Image (tube, rainbow, N blue to C red; front, side, top):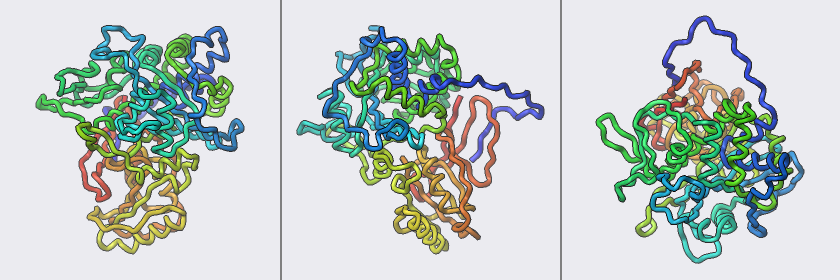
Length: 501
């Protein structure tokens, strides 16, 4: 895997200009790169600094629905799960906005994310729950898409549905609506997103766009508030091939989650780089959220400010993002997603308080090529001795090398496994693996695999790690990263290309 730049590096480089140091408040407002946390911390600051606007912040009464924060509950040592809901209320938007088309004022959970904050470790992770997950709805005798729980009984029913179906405790709640999202984008001006080809949102059933999103020009494009909202809400996403035909993204809600997570990270980084250092922009961020955010009644200003202080040095690349593993299927005539609880077990362990370094939070399997079975068994035994559960190695056709493969969300988990295996193993990001699942593909024997522990640095979450023969090259905007893709553990698949602005 290599990074391809659009122009060569010059031999003489200008001295690097030192970036202005961010204050703890600037970091705290944006420390997990997601708009709903921005809203929560911005609202907390506002409560602390300007009590005249306290009444403008909506409070949601959730007694009995929220789980208590587990011990230790002292500041600096807490492990907290915050349910972040981006609701699809269009109140506050322009009546002519394309998103208003066909709307009757309903209010569903359009984006459902659990933010996991471990104060002791200083780590943060996001778990997106696809809105199309088909689950039993708490307090009812019906099954439906999980976003319907919000419509049925509000935040309390959604929280109870999540805890009942996934076993993940929810300690606090934050809600942001469409207008709040647009307000944050407006405060930073725009957010750049790279489009490798033209793209649009198009519902073929009704022969119209569901959100109004249309990007006719490929490349890095600055999305302004209304266009950004249309982009992240697109559930009928299509890209245009070279022959002019439109290709449907068959990933549906799962594809939308990946685009949302990518956009929110870009939004957070844009706010840090271009906005948070400017007090006028920072003030706009706060003001844009006051009337469009709702917090549970126990989410106090002091609690949020404690979190902000603890994560004052948190960097964007440290955020871990995941999506609940699921498969496309049908419930009657409804196209839905069915969760895979066994594959989700490592994520559930993590969101129940296990350390990111704990083997219980990582799913590991070992595959091998003919002639490499002994080494595969040796690796499996070493993993079992380190409290992983690799199972029995499986034979598959492989290239003649040893490589540790992880999906788009698994870079941090892969780095933990690599420390057990030792030197001589490559690390690759691939398609076809979800969450914190890692596959060790043993294609040929190495002189030494188990033995001296490899020095493995924590990889950034936004870019794939490189193999043993790759080198990092300074990139220009946009950078293009070519990755090997696999359809499963057998290592066969097509290349995919990721880009960033």
